[in-house]
Length: 127
Image 1 (cartoon, one colour):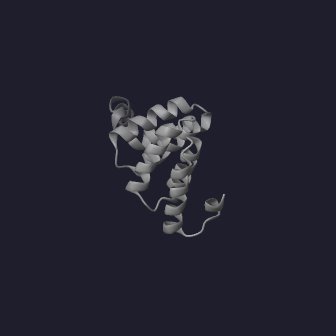
Image 2 (tube, rainbow, N blue to C red):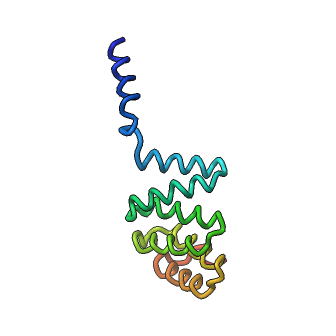
């Protein structure tokens, strides 16, 4: 019984040990699932600010920006992802969408060419 009380006491006294970027990332994903994109965006922005070299956080930030019709910031964020992790195909797909959504057709075409060189012919490249 004492062991359980001690463990419970630690859990209540030390919640920061249980929190962190992974928990925040999970919370942001829950917010997206719940349709609360504004809350998810806030979390992803903070994660990206705290971990600017984390392509996972930046990718989800860009995806959320794009879902919120913020194509210009999304294109900047997603370009960062392609620079950090050039083999992340999803970043190129989303970047192409962001460029099209912001009226930057030439940049969208350049991303298609870049992706073809890196990944070969993919169905999404012929859309």
